[in-house]
Length: 462
Image (cartoon, rainbow, N blue to C red; front, side):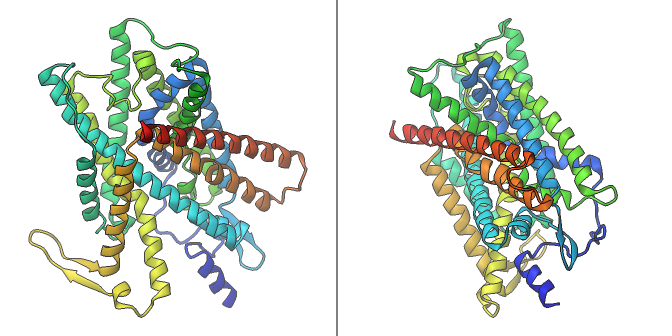
């Protein structure tokens, strides 16, 4: 049992049994597709019309399709890494991305992966604070434009609304873990489809109203070649942010029953989900660009390409805020859980870390409080809110986040684990193809990251 215990210590979430598992609830195939779509479609869809506008009518759709193909290749490789062939314990299933990296590539790379995953999650919550404040401000501006006219100043700041959203998240962070927020996750998913569909519908209506398709093959012109390159690189980062879901893929795959083999089911579900998502993304991006051409806003629902019907704009932005309330918790709860586990192992006898106190408030069920959770989670929310206030730039921040996580988490680790799992020999045909694929994606990541950082610096200095 000594070696089994060591494995469990290094990969605490893995299942050491090679049978179909003892998980009591298994999701059917159609729910797997739904999980993937829910995990992919989010706030990133709102920036796709702007991204297509920077790239033009040919390069824009091609880039969206290429990112879709890249995402599918990544999921194809990663789904094969769900089961690790351990020489003594047989087939070990990896119920999380970090567990898989730890098993295939070793403890050192597992720690590197853990840092990248948590930084990516942290950055996404910062982006959600920015987006929520932008949507709240858009509701106020929409009502103001409706009453005062489209030329009215109607200026509102961001900081106050970020603080309000942060306060809500401090309260929401009292939710113990992901298992206790199923309803919140369902509401967030419904809101995501709702506001995305509204954006698509308004784009179609605007094109019909204009009577022609706006935009050009070359995209939005820039003052010089260098500025055009920065915008192209940034748009690639925004598309990258909208697509990959590798961080949650193995968690979804862990819900599948075998037979048939989990990897085959996951590959089919991923293909269907990515096809649906890509079609939806192309429609949203294309109709947004066709409606506004060179004036395409950075955020389709808050940039005020649309003014009427104002109540529908208000409703769509309210859906965004509700989605982000749940989305923030979905992305922050893994960090909360990791902090809880680390502190419990480090300080097993600390009352500050391990003691829970029951409380009962009027009209609410009894709940338990832990001092560590209150302090850590409140500090976490304060930090994300503070960073969002310092850098309130929607498109640029999404570009940085998309570029930061794209190559290492979506490409590098899945490729390297696939090599180990299938014992791919160096300089074989498959090895050369996948190495070339990884190198090209690395170059795209560097370009996207540089362009997005340049955008943030330019906005900060302007």
